[in-house]
Amino acid sequence: QVQLVESGGGLVQPGGSLRLSCEVSGAIHTINTIGWYRQAGGKERELVATRNNERFTTYGDAVRGRAIISGDRTLQMNNLRTDDTAMYYCAACHRNWCSEMTDFESWGQGTQVTVSS
Image 1 (tube, rainbow, N blue to C red):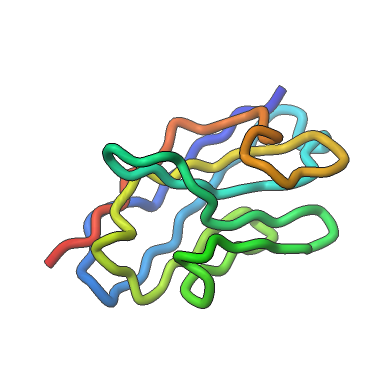
Image 2 (cartoon, helix red, strand yellow; image 1 turned 180 degrees about the horizontal axis):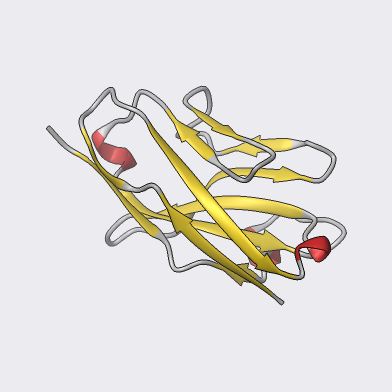
């Protein structure tokens, strides 16, 4: 069992940057992959980025080239756009193979990112 707490969200202007953090406690050694997902109002939750213990990373199409997920579980978002506005969630997958959002069993409460001028 792990607990995840996100931080770093806030209001940022278009073109700006944010670094989101994911503090993890509990059975950290059981985590294979950390993921960041986001959900905007009225839309489905979508992939932002994942990183596994072998440093393999994946990125959602909407953020590829603007997002970086690091080994310390932070998510750096650059050149933010208004359509990046969403609740951002950190999640942990404990399975041997984590490829789908449904593979992530542990979730934080989220941190709100609002991109607006």
